[in-house]
Amino acid sequence: MASSSTLAGHTVVALHAHPDDEAIFTGITLRRLAAAGARTVLVVATSGDLGESRVPLRPGETVPQRRTAELERAAELLGVDRLVLLGHRDSGLPGWESTRHARALAAAPVLPLARALAELADAEGATALIHDDEDGIYGHPDHAATHRIGAAAADLAGLPAYRTTVDRDALDSRTPAGHLVHGAAGAAGVRYGRRAEEISLSVTGTAEDLAVKRAAILAHESQVAESDLPEDGFAAAYGQEWFRRTGGEPGPLEVLAALTGHRADHRADHGADHKAVTPAP
Ligand SMILES: [Zn+2]
Image (tube, rainbow, N blue to C red; front, side):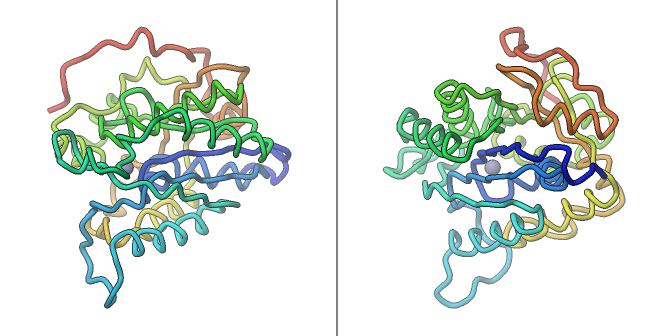
């Protein structure tokens, strides 16, 4: 484990689309940032309104209320210092009527949200942002929106950004159908992630990080069943988190990547070279 002061003085603001994305895609990273002494601010754009609950809700409880409570629990497990909810509505998948809802994140103007995020980052003295990559990890409209908002905010605030994705090559070879993103991409009818050579850096979890990440994902019990996350194979699917850095000098995530034994290399700003490839089976 990193010493508790390696990243003291750093503040990282992570933007995600829905409750559960923070744990699924950046749980190890958030935990390790906190453990290394960085302040972490988690900003979640929607309450995941359209994620049908797989468990009975309490009388009068709504899905957004339930998912917000689950998010608070997950954030606590991951050592998040501050949780900010933007209160937009889940947009649903492409073609759904819900994408045009007045409060739908995907329909919201980017600039005001980006300005608000840049102001928050500025007020927090942030040293880096984390947000979804250009493809929204797997093409969900809300993830594409958090990409646009995060990228614009990073520009406005003059901050380096780490774009969250998954390494498609790694996942397909290690766990052909064993990551939640496989099901999500299948439901959306899109490909997911990027090729290994497009990834700038990865953060690898220890056994302890993985236990916390699994607990944080399972805190979203209205969405994820324990049987969706078998312990056997969890490390193969969820033991690494992947990013592409844009702008600035190497920052806190490169420090983490180095601490976890994975070299942070120089392949930032690689997005322009991205080419479509055959979708995974
Ligand atoms: Zn999501």
